[in-house]
Image (cartoon, rainbow, N blue to C red; front, side):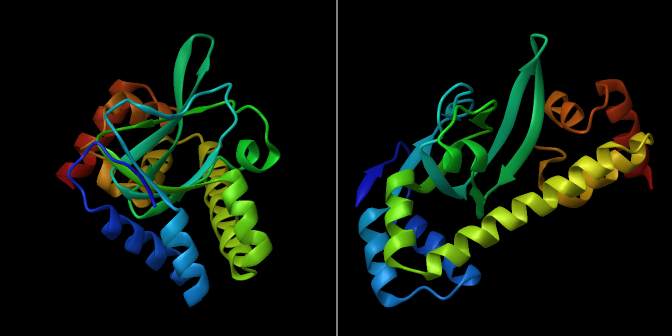
Length: 204
């Protein structure tokens, strides 16, 4: 087991949570469980530390045991937030990871984070040796495809309130724990409008 943790965290607990997450996607056989326990990489990241930098090829598929991360890119020298991933979820830059191409976006820790991951080659080995992992991978990819389709549809609405409601529904835990600039950028809204809508909804 490879462990690279900067925090006082029980790596074994993180691995068990990752296995439980996978088991909810498809039953994890005893043989696969043993293999993953011996293969998983547990890593710690500090606030603003990058898990993936734009221009690099994504080498890992992660389970986020603790913390939250932000996906972003630069557009005309302005930082644009594309997505968030919260703890107990998968982090997968699918196009870069599976296509072995440079990522157009970066992924940064919003605070102290702990991940459990597999490299591309390790995951391919799992796909070849353990057929159930193919179903797990497909379900993770399908989930991301579904929520991103919803996001793109919502962002086409003209009404700012509908975009805010999407954020409120999908990432309620982030509304008061993440810088407003990131949240407003994510739903294509200026900061002043974001504060106004949030204040009005708190009154209600």
